[in-house]
Length: 354
Length: 78
Image 1 (cartoon, rainbow over the protein chains, first blue to last red):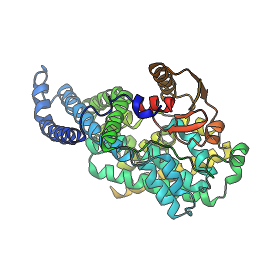
Image 2: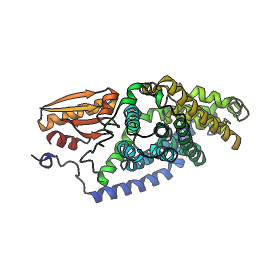
Image 3: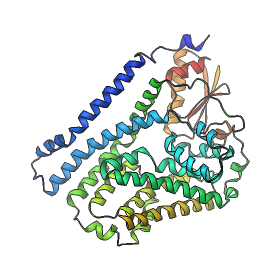
Image 4: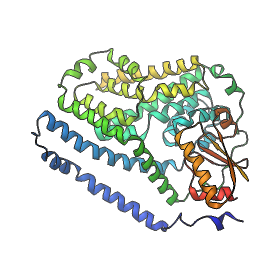
């Protein structure tokens, strides 16, 4: 029996052209709705019995405009990234990176970390798979640092809530930290600090696994994009609403200069404090960014806020616990030390520039 | 009787995948015995670097993300 005769024909109910037309129409509809968000939210705010320039009015306006804006931006970018990522896979990335030298390898690994689909729950098999395929430890770290830190959810939220300059800054310096930290770890020659069993392992790397039948059509890629949107929304919608809610309260009620004193550029200790506080905190980018925006609006320094955000996302305790299976404590300490130093440097640099 | 292995450290997607395998097998009427592989060492040894991964009778057919339902059926039937 061949697989074709039994494969249900539910897959392509619609011809490919109707998908292309549908995606294009959705993009146009998206744009038309997005343009109307500001006037629509203003009309909705006016329905509340509060003065628009009061604390409550300002908080409500912030909330009603930012929630739909962020949701729409997120849907657009997550869909686009879902389609782009369907061209990449950890297996292809591994094959590409094996045999690359340090230096160029770190740069490529950090870039691929952004484009390759990655879930932190497969960090351990991925780590073992990379190292056993002969990818240098430092290059593997570049990938593992950039993959969670430079993600589209963080970038969309920064873009939508804070502005494109800060978003681009985050992208560039997130990649820079991944490249440099991986390079430094690689040059420390710490292969001996892996757990013993990891060094002995030889995964299927010698005979690369060829998975048949995963040739995707463009329609399959659209479907993956839609699936990515569904999955991200199921995971983050509550955080976005809570985050923007807290952001709205800060926006409406916190005095203008309060944050300037605590988190302003003059308080040099605020950057290390932000990094240290960020490590045990574990939330996804969605929860933290609306708060970040509101803090920035009240005079907190850009570098301090970025350092806090990077620390929350890149140095999370749960991920350390997962990686503990393959790394010794000493190596985890080095990892935190190197990445933490990079984040500190970015924080100070930005407080000095902006 | 087909022997299906689902590779994954135990995240939600891996559990969903296990259930999808069982459902697909029931739809096409093939008896399967599903084994979950959660040990990271065993996962890596099988050549799976993005989870969940699926092997049918020792042949790796899928890695990374939830499988497509109709493809899953064809793997079980193959």
